[in-house]
Length: 321
Image 1 (cartoon, rainbow, N blue to C red):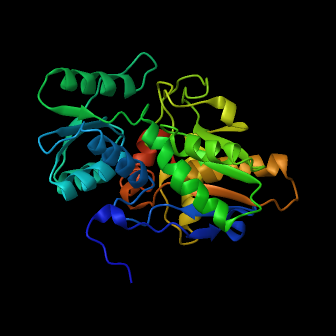
Image 2: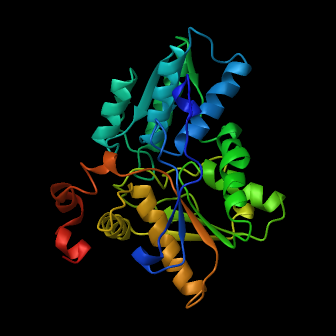
């Protein structure tokens, strides 16, 4: 029986779903949403805060500030609350309303930036806002998840070894690309430990992380409008870009079988299924995909009929109902 004193001490790291009966592809889904932050981002948030505290960058008087579309903001809200620290999350209009409510319930301040950057996204505007806050001299500390090596180190030291232990014969690993912390940590681990694993990055159509053409993206989580500093394509074997309509179709297919996952998971599963069908037709490779979070925070968006109609047209045309 686990007994903890801080919320970040609890995380289920060994739960996998066999998706063969759902998507008809040989794929195991590593579920990262069973912790008090509800997502894989708790690992990176804890690692970045702990490193900043060790280095003296965060003191009891500091105000942590970070740009986030939701999950990292929630994780940092939780950790700041447990430490008695103030936290400001700088997000944008695509952030799920439920995620904003969770952050505020945990005592965080949420600021929404609506200025678009040169690629039509919000990331550049969010980062400019954070930089201006830090330049104000009011005690703000930016962890900078997009360039902080402790982001990917959390997965190099935790997520990847956990997968390696459960699947010693792993052949293919699918990881969604947001800040690329999870992706780069896992890719570096398997490369540097000389494991013959094909690492496939899964990105959203409209993201520029791997040189894509910037387009409108409505589902928060994966994809960027500015290439993250930590991404290193030399560690990645292949990239799959998934249209958001495929993401939505996939999460609804999973939900119809009792598995309510978030948008990022829908993107990763959709991309993995397409890649496996193309590369391993009729075969049964050992393949794992990482599910960053669960679906409750998306009930007002990708699972909501009016939201789908507003942004994507007739839901029946997407879902095939």
